[in-house]
Image 1: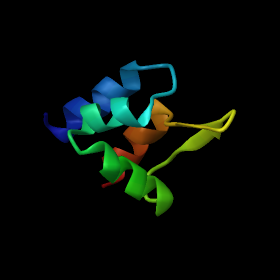
Image 2 (image 1 turned 120 degrees about the vertical axis):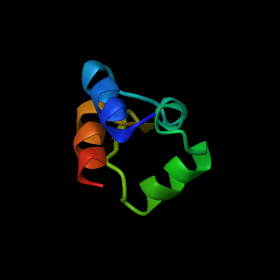
Image 3 (image 1 turned 135 degrees about the vertical axis):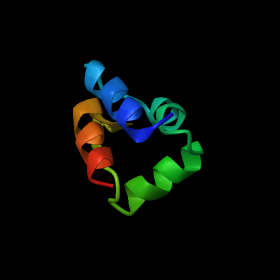
Length: 65
């Protein structure tokens, strides 16, 4: 999927995403998402101790890549 299509898809979402959902949207292995998270390369947050990814923040991040 072209990056602009992925950005649009993320912008259309409104609820926090899991690592699995992000990996499917970005077409990368889930372990890559966890690595980027540990390295603070991808925007993320912990909600009640659970990793979540804000789709709008991800869209902005991806557009800058």
